[in-house]
Length: 474
Image (cartoon, rainbow, N blue to C red; front, side, top):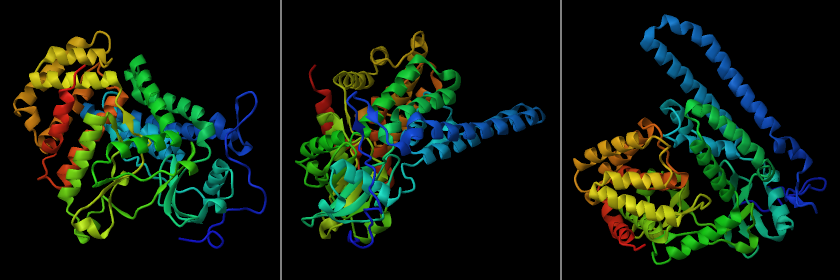
């Protein structure tokens, strides 16, 4: 770490303009002059316009030659251009950060809206971007806390631990000596969110093409509401505390302690523990960490969150899951969860319908299953018959695999693939965003199990929690 009075610069030659969203007496947010253009969406619109102009030019130059490629070659050329266009859009969204990067990640999961080649391009859009200058970050911290950085931190590292689409995290040390991680939201997001979301809505509508519909608009509204929650770090602090309390009975699970007195809507200060990412298998092996035990702990933690607590960490990618790097890790590894911005409470109605849907699946009750989909708004008007036929066909494929509760990891992943095909190939079928996050979380868990320790029976570990969920009364 670097001491504040040497390598880390926290003050400039003149007074720094506060980035704290100040409210005038009228109740409106005053936008600092340097964010005026971004607040109205001008630079974002220009970047997207340049991107789509380049795509249109490529399409115009390539289309005349399609006639010489034959019917099959013509289709391949069109798919190729669409894939290249999606890759260009993905790069632009990543550069724009914030809601644009999040919208790309959201789109990569929408099997019911976008073509496979478009989703594949967006799937490469990782939640990691180039870091912002330190002075920009420390200005947010000082404005949010209302005091100079040195009044709260003895040290504040210049190089971030990580940078994502809406924030970056720095390691620091409090005046009392405790090591902490400080998550700081990018300063312009508080002012540009409305314009960013309006442009992202237009973008996803264009990418959806003829599949656009009022239901798709509702799905985007769900995404926008979820993003607004993710940008509220005070909410994240509350959720982290609630999940920590729910998992307190498992000594192998660790949730960072939040310093609420130092946290605001745009700054989150939490305890820091040295840890090894799940993806760093070489270091895990070097430390002698038993990955089977790690996976069993993770399975227990997620099964309890999803099926018992109804509140779950919905962003389980490798950058958010760690093994604490400590001497006992080779004998009794502890799993560290971070980043609770995307955590979700399962809506009671959705929780009830999910339980009824699993009961219908276990009974092979096609009509009951489709009725539940209809109640959840998953079926567009007039599309029920087609959806019912597709669900019946999926049930027949599942029947050949045996009893659902006896499925192994490979069978669960195969079931996930069947559900993806159902969404891709069935007109009029859409998945609510909250249910999508639930499905993504569970499928990631089984995929991780298949990669790290295929011999661990995640379904068996999850079964007691699932059965408790299925036994709940209305």
